[in-house]
Image (cartoon, rainbow, N blue to C red; front, top):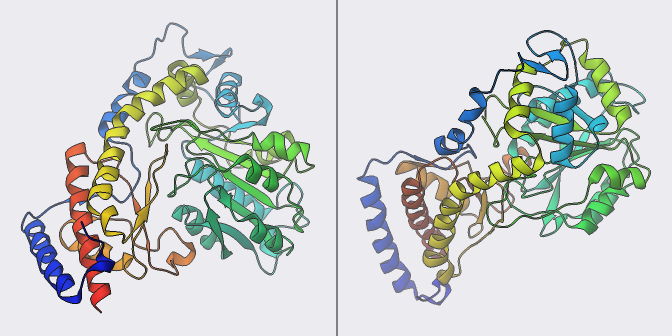
Length: 422
């Protein structure tokens, strides 16, 4: 197959007519396909049905506590031990919250605004300007969370081994820069894992803001699909480099057990955990210990949790392979795009020819394939090159993923030819 760059103008016109004909055929099918969000599929959720049918011979007692009653804010000892094992930190570093890590992130920022963090000079609401660093492309919900507090978002280039550290070191010299969003393993949407060197450089930062927050969203810590990858313990790295209070690590079981009824935790210094626990005591007497009880009985320990995630991987792997193989067959020979080939996580990050991503999404929508809006993976929904599209193959059936990718490939070729001929 020739590359599009080697086509004559007439060959491009002929190819566009052929692609338009394929496009109309998909339109005639009245499709309803969705690759927008990284939701677990029904088959993945079924893996955790055993969570709902525990052995109740212990009378709902865990650590000598009746989990049906009030109290134990911050998590039962067994729950903290389970998640400390999964995150490879100490139980005293763990705070167990509700069901969503995003809620814990929001809560932390909200507390920073109302009360300040442990090392804040004043509540963030009393600062003239709050800026947050946003490695991009990145997780859209992080950016929207920041914007809900009127933060100024500062894009930082995300490279193959993590965020551009030269940019970060320069930017954190400003006291108004209060933090950075990081997805360090199988990042959303790139699927990259931060290198040990980048993690060490982050741990050695000397921000001007004494309450700078390294928001370490370790959402995919045990979510390998092909091969596992490792990252250093950021809490330990920061402690060794005089930044014990800087990192806040988050995770949940939203893509481990049930997406709407999981367990969320954050890990940080003991001082940070105690400080946030005190403020949280004004909000709630305690989170759902019944849910903690069920998860401890079901997941048991890190080894068992990893085995459970291997079952998820067996369901996800064919879907990722379906997307990647079709892109490789239909798009790679044309030399018009590139994409990530992640070992884990939930997304494939696709880069179309500049200034065609929005058009590709539009074409897909018109024939019944929903994609995340172009630009969503950048602060302010603005991709400067209009190139990046996040592909989420987890939820649909394998058959639908295959069909959706076929549609996507036609739309990529359609939009690219239009651009080349314009």
